[in-house]
Amino acid sequence: MRITWLGHAAWLIEAGGKRVLIDPFITGNPSSPVKASDLEKIDLILVTHNHSDHLGDTVEISNRTGAKVVSMFENVNLMCSNGLKQDHGFGMNKGGDFVDLEGIKVALVQAVHSGNECGVVLNIDGKTVYHAGDTAFFSDMGLIGSQFEIDIALLPIGGYFTMGPKQATEAAKAVKAKIVMPMHYNTFPPIRQDPGAFVKMLSGQKGLVPVPGKPIEL
Ligand code: NI
Ligand code: MN
Image (tube, rainbow, N blue to C red; front, side):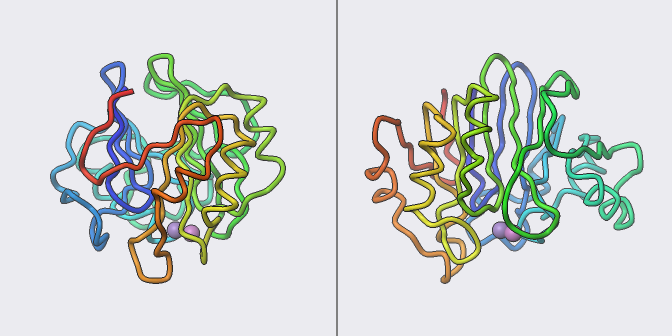
């Protein structure tokens, strides 16, 4: 599996011949290493909530590439009323087991934020990735860790709008991820954080600090 951070909460995951985007906020993202128009051949786009720094370029990328879009029902409806091709949307909700979409297993899980929020768990090519979306730390993250065997957790550490580093360290422990990568920091002044310090706070879990645009092979 190859994971590339596109800055903020945006990620490109490539595995088993599939290309998945999560929260593709590219245009207007000061830490994005790419242009939205550079993103081609996308199979699936997962959107954790309807805030603009997560919805981002979803409608444009989906309509251009044919990528299916998975999000909470109401968010999909919102995107359809903003021009997303009707048959591209897969509205879901939280709480079930994996659903197979385009050969990629996807489940939506709890998050504590606003904007009709969720986290996403996906399994491609035998590996399971948890993208927490924007969220506070909450004790039921332990349920996510017991229901899914999470290999890689992508956790917000910016504070202000989401968990900060201290809470994200607790979240990492709760979901029992083997590998933890921080996100949603240093995009804008209020969410300035030191990702190296976060990674050092993790105990018994491997932390990796992603560099925007630099693929990580796992
Ligand atoms: Ni948000
Ligand atoms: Mn956000």
